[in-house]
Structures are given as structure tokens and as C-alpha cells.
Length: 333
Image (cartoon, rainbow, N blue to C red):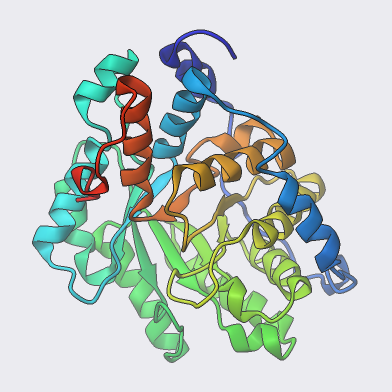
């Protein structure tokens, strides 16, 4: 791409047809049972992601603006309040200061974040605050973050969030089913969650840092997609090890293989520990190189993040002014 940030953003924002929701498929252990992931090879490939492309000046600004549109702006803290959620929603509507957007020549593009992600009990607050914006509300569910509640309560929590207006449901899988190899049990669980979601999109959180091996991460990705997940997501953000490029590489290659088999495009969401603009660029490059242009849209790619937006805004201000401002001048809410 060449030209102004606005030209570059418009080029990046050229919408491509999304094939619709993932209907899933019949459980077939032969499709994934043979998978063995070579950790060393994955880590070598992941290490090249940040070195293969150089995004500078207007190009970097455009890619950072694209990253903003793919953020699930998130608050999942014990001290969340209705007021905090409302402020987050207002930030989602106007994620980058208008003076910066004007200086970049993109003030008329209506840039917003991809979604707002909250606990079940704040869904109604977020839906009300975002009315008319087109920004969906995502709710974490099924006993987030550990998932250690009975199945009937998990189903009821999904239904409650959907009834309150959530357009997306981020569920946590039962890690124990992965660790003991109960793949059919995991499949049945995801199918039940998908049914409870109705028209809401299902995003399955694998908690990759708790699955022991990259082979388990690959297999769990396959089972969730077979079960009808519209997105697969790395982490809750509450584990000791969250999103990493090696985990992501394994998951996006599972998405690629599933697409080749079924024709269904499944989205990807890295979450937890992504707080710097340079990290966002690495993930965008990964998606472009491994999955192609359609996966650079919020319909198929999201960041689960809270502090990332502040650093992106700070980098955009540096591009405009040539100076870095303090991080506190770019709060998430």
C-alpha cells in the first residue's frame, strides 16, 4: 500500500464476503486424533513473524487503526460498576481522539472498536449504552474464568446473556475434558453451548496455557470448530500464561485446515497479555500471512484487550506530532 493513512485504511477496510456462521460438523476423531505438534518448529516460525515485514509511518498508522476496529474492549474485574461499563462503551464508540483522526485524515470513517466484552450482569447496561452504534456486546459465560460450575448453570447463564441482548457469547471449555482426552464429551458440550446461543455468535475460550501441550491446543481447536464455534479464543486473560504467538500459530493453522475441509470461516481471538501496539501488529501480520485478507476484519478477528487501545492511541499521536505522550493521557475508559 502507498499514500496517506486514509487511503491505506480504506484499502485495509475493503470488506470481503464472509461465508456466514460455522454450522459445525459431525464428530470425527479421525480428523484430529493423529495431530502431533512439533513445538520447536512452531516456535521457530513464530519467532519470524515480527521480523518478516516492516510497517512504517503511514502504513503503520493504517494497520494500527485496523487493529482498533478488531478490539473487543473489555472489562472483567471484580470492581466493575455500571458507571465503569458505560465509560467503556463511550470509549468503544470513540476509541481514538477526534483531533488525531482529523490529523490522520480519517475523521469521517466512523472508526469504533469491534465489540465491548463484559460480565453477564452488565450486558443490559452495555446494550443500552451502545444502542444505535452497531457495536455488539459480548458476554463471558459458563462460569468464566474457570468453568467449574454445573452444566445446567452454564446453559442458563448463556441464555440469560442472550436474553439481555448479548450478540456474542465467550464461553470457557472444560479443560479437564481436554486433559483426560474426552474429546467426544468436549464436542457435546460445545454443541450444547451453540444451541443455547441461538442467533448469538459462539466464541470458545480454550485457556491454552492450561492445556499442557500444543497438540492438545490443536485438537481442542478442531473439536470446538466441529461443535459449531464461530470463533476460537486463546485465553480468559486470568491464566498465568495467556495469548502467545506459538499458541496462535497452532490455532490459526487449525482454522485454515478446517476452512479447507468445510468451507466455513472460523474467527480467531487472542486474549490476555496483549497490551502493546507492536504486539497487535505482529498478530495482524500472522493473520494476513497464515489465513489471508478476509481474516483482517472484525467479523473474523478480534483482540481481547483492555490496555492495548491506550498504547495504540499513543503511537498514533506520536505519528501525528513526533512526540510520545504519557500513557495516562489515553485511558481505556
